[in-house]
Length: 357
Image (cartoon, rainbow, N blue to C red; front, side, top):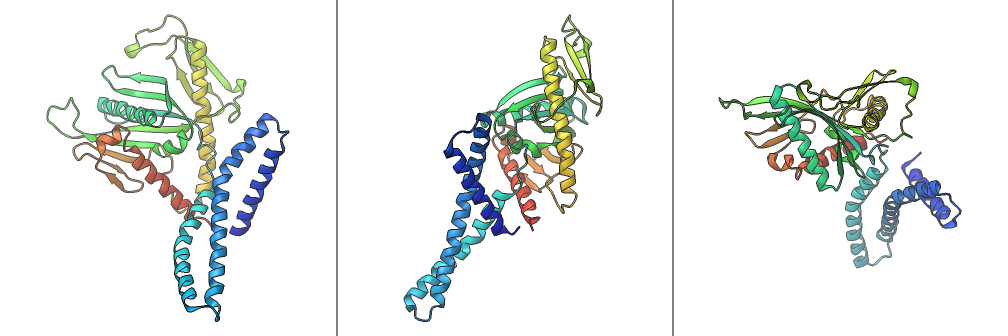
């Protein structure tokens, strides 16, 4: 299908939906689905109309310029307008191509954020806590809701592991490129000699899956209950409320003990398990699509070092796009994180545009 045919198909579909919506008689699920599709297509059709209008105007100007009977002054004005339209045309075409890029089905979803301390002992755990606070502040700035699902702390401010749900529209689209190894270079508070240490933490961002996205068969689960314990093995609960769920086909294990209710712990564990299974399937599909790619922004591989936070120099460097910001404090405060995220999204779009036939 040619580019023009693709545009005609979109306009035709848009008109078809408009007719269905105005005709009435739709059940609620159909009305919801078609209303969303109509809203998604509206800006695309507006850009198609603008492109077609510009193309018609250029054709009219070409005819006027080529007309030997045309007045010299009119021809001069037409040539000036033609140059202006031709200069604007590539940007309009690129905007439209960007709108037509295949959407990641998970982009509009909420997300499960998992952060684990890596190499570096206590300093790595303190950095993991810093990263979690950065994403908390970023979520607050975007009006998203953060719910803690699981936390394993060190007792002195560090996090060995933290899992949270971040709810809101388009959360995954904004955070999906954050998955990978984040490295920090700084002088730990416990370092008497003032030497710079390098530590790391691993971040995973998973699209939050609904039950309709992932079907989990009860026979594929092994559920163990046990008494929850705090740091150092101290008992924090006298009942068997902690839950460990093992997904037998994949071997994925999720454990929850934050709540005093076994029922609540099981619900949280299933939420995390569903997200991990959904992401595993999504990564498999992405890998198949990316096999033919010449380049991409990160692989989503959690062992890939993606970013360095250098405290002595006050800089943050994203290694995938070679972008350095001397704005470390504001990045960690969540204020300037969008500068990195916007650049990563733009790079991904550029790479995908380059692959279009």
